Length: 100
Image (cartoon, rainbow, N blue to C red; front, side, top):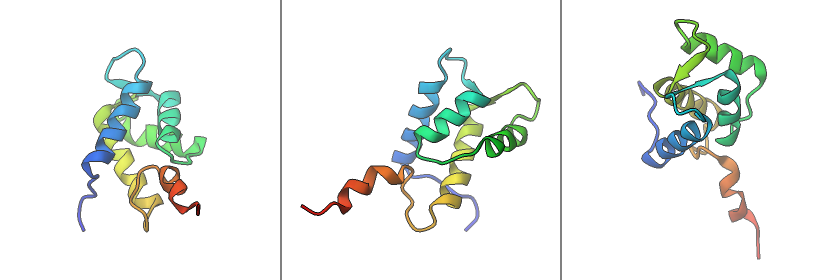
């Protein structure tokens, strides 16, 4: 119970996604980068969800969120979207189900 945590490999994926879309290397990403980064991690997020997340985590209304915020968002969504399978990117394991 309590706080949701990600496994180490999930944290690495999240960090990679953040760094990939933090193109100007400022340590923060904007709305558009957040949306693309979430999709890259395999989350199907709608525009409205991303807007809500920005509003929730961008406390100073800067138009950006920091890496720590992105990690928190990823934790939230991972545990909300994949109750059965705790993999961050469900699509990556789908090839296992293909029979020879």
